[in-house]
Length: 397
Image (cartoon, rainbow, N blue to C red; front, top):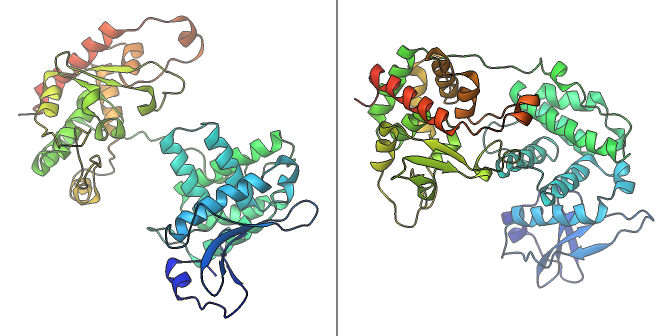
């Protein structure tokens, strides 16, 4: 059975002794029922065949939800059964959870990517229900079979059965994370092969998006966001003037804005390339971009320039807005604005090196090793030139 808060509340207590309800989502996690109380427990099999059992003392029934207790159980089970010498015989869902916890401790991933990995393992390996986009019975069966198999027994057929039963885009991500895990297991000599190898051949290859907005389409979108008003309009304008990624703007903090210098300074942890480029990224703001920031009201207690509908939460382009704006221009995404700006800079005669730096891209190969010039002056001129171009198109009028 799958443990739920309501199910534990309604469970009949034994008149004497103890009884256990075991969760079918996390093997080894359950609830012990006695005549007077209920408590969360975990159990696992040792190499010598013994099955220790311990109470999760940090998670009291009623004080934490089942979902929270389940997460704590995963971490505890990862600690006690996730050793390399036992790894081959451990069910994949437990082994991957162990790997995830280890990578988290090593800070191997940025927070946003770590959350994505966590969600994909929980959904497509451990079998948790999704809030949106319900899985088919075929997908559920394939996931349950895959997650229960010992690591050493997982075959390519098991992996493809799950990949074929879910959406192609999610299958790409599932295969990538699974391949990363098996590569790690191979390095620790847990397995001899990677059943998720050559993932791009399986999912049709990496689809590189090439959609480029025209000036007319961009103006159409700007008019649509203008009808929506701030904060959607101002956030859209900043994306266009700066070429930043979506969350770099929607989660922009007042502490990152220098009105006097007309700059935004993004710390490494807020940037996609932050692990490889530990220097803060300084963006020079066109006067129109600065105006978009300055017209935002300050919410007391919130650090964000653009704030959402809930207290302390940053703004995002919520579904209600995008459902109205999306159909206006065919097949476009917010990220296409970066490509629109990059193509526009080239059209305006900005060098490739400077244009790439304006987007926060890093130089590769020997260029990145030997060219240590900051290009601060050149980038400032490029952002100004691009802002003037947008103004001439009619933006912000």
